[in-house]
Image (tube, rainbow, N blue to C red; front, side):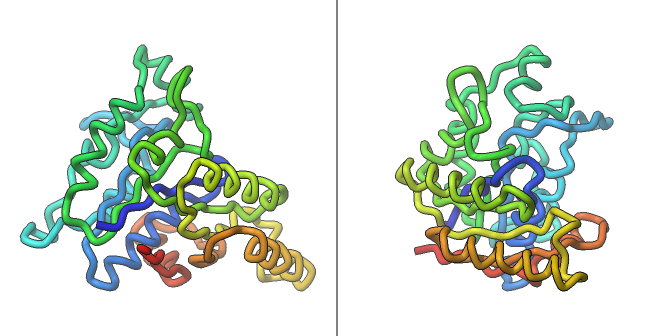
Length: 245
């Protein structure tokens, strides 16, 4: 079944909103979905253990396979096996918790999940493409190990052109296919409200479309803060699903 690794130009680039939006778009088309967050820092303590807001947003958009109850939620531990409290780089958060996450841990968790009958599976990374997992491995190696095509989320802000092009070059140099990119308007200074900002905004998008070696799957504007399911549904209006080929 089609599965993709979702990475970003940086932390807070809009990966989760884009991932949840793609999953919501797939659900709208009657497809089964699974959103996965292998490792997450910045998690909060709950009676059920640490919970990460990004992973919860993906969990809310995960629909069981055919034959299962569509109201049956996918277990949180399935979505996010490694959650850490400090909102810092995942390998440092794990170290503070006295743990180490190895690539073998993640591939062992992910391999059976990719074998599930889902029409669309998204694996969301942490931060940018080369965020460390530990002292020797990084999150990009998970996409490489599982040979997953990559969707790049570009946070539309000052500096994004270089960040996006460098990330795209690193992805393609690794041998993986860049399946598409999504623009995410994270900078309030670049909006549709002012003519000058609008021209700059559109010039940035045109440059990305010209220089990134993959199709644009959509551009998500700044959305009013709302509950994650509502924001995912709103983001879905601006997105199209990637071509599986």
